[in-house]
Image 1 (spheres, chains in turn blue, red):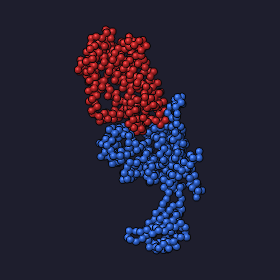
Image 2 (cartoon, rainbow over the protein chains, first blue to last red; image 1 turned 90 degrees about the vertical axis):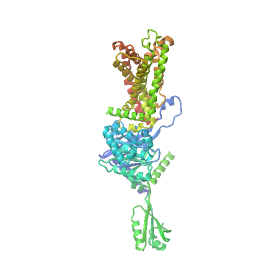
Image 3 (tube, rainbow over the protein chains, first blue to last red; image 1 turned 180 degrees about the horizontal axis):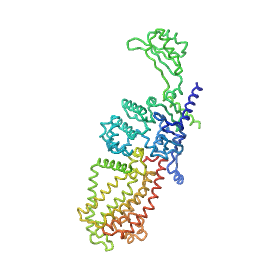
Image 4 (tube, each protein chain N blue to C red; image 1 turned 180 degrees about the vertical axis):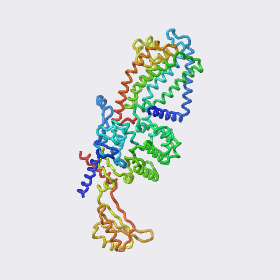
Length: 366
Length: 271
């Protein structure tokens, strides 16, 4: 098992390195990026013998790329380096070493061109002018993107319609609900129709229905012509799983794995628990049918709503093997009526926790 | 494109200003109060100025010209740093910097409204003096404008240095203290600079010579109050050009280094 996991992980890493550099459809390329935040006025502090803290190493040799039209998720704990990486792509912070390009433009040497291609939406409410209306805010930023007055107004109206913000257009930003503020931030990121979108927790403050709407919108952006490339950072792992084509796990400033959500889960738990709920088959018959094939079989009676009883059958299997189909057909042939089938698989949380444990272990050893 | 962006900032700041309506009227009222107070103080000195201080025969004219011009100079000097500080403290600097706008453009454009506002305020000083207190100006207004623009540009260079300081050290800007207090005291806003040598000694009396505001104020007063021509005000004009020639490349170089440093430290948006 360990051998299989190591092999899948090696493939994931190999895939990560293969992608960098040559693919013509690469939208964002991050090559060997490291970032250490220097201590301000360190030399002066040394001269005056004032205590200084160690420089903060936020990113360490990060390399990966994001394909055009891809929704790429970045997950990690607070302080793992997600925001620093996003800000480097957005040209707000310069890397200590390494290189970031957006559609071939270097984020340090050609920063204005990069900014023209990147839209950033953060959950930071203070990024708007609170005493201006939503519309005034949007038109101001549209003008900074170089849109004419007419184009700015028309684009703003278009985005307000798309984000269901028309009723908030004439209201001051400070008076908006948290959800509307969040939606306005994403709408602003789309003002100049950037080919690359950096979304930092876009659904953090939204109610469940608004969150679902935002997810549909993000998903639709990648399907548009031309498609938008999205880098999504979020602590909502279900959202990452639902939206992202690939996910990067960042821990302690390093990228630990990049793969599809399914493969990442597969790396960490190849065994899944299966629960079948059925009727019309006594315990003994179930054990007779499945007992030899599933040694860890658990059978329980559970009351149903009609004063009767259902039977819950629990067993473990290798993910995606063919024994689930076999078990269902045998139970059915024996006269059982299958009511439900649930599987309990590894989640991205398990994946993240696993990498965090190894990071903590590595720190402990060093 | 630059003008479109400057306009965007001016419109934004106008919208923000009108969202505080009361402040606008109070500011107008305060200028009127200052001019009125100066008028009554000037009555004490009227006609008593020494004959060699020709600009000060009408002290009210000298003071309100001094205040109007100082107001403008201080904006040239402080608004660039204030623009950065204000965006940093509001938290909007990051979102503005996410647009394809360079930091130098941002600094210039976001201080544009300050100049519009200060032009209005400075005009109010002169207007109230003319309307209520019979202060009359003569001479070549275009030449006075040349002095005003030139001195403001020189002070804007110091403002760029100040903005660089704000970007790296955030607060505690030494330029503000030195120039703010220094200009009011040493460049002849409220009294002739010759008096410094007379009362404070030769070394302190030399300080005004190192301040661009001294030459700016001197030039504007000589044009507007004494009615002097271009040939007569050539010396302060040349001094201002000299200041500009030295300070402009130096301040731009420092500013570029400050931006790079702030980006490297990741502190560009911190306050």
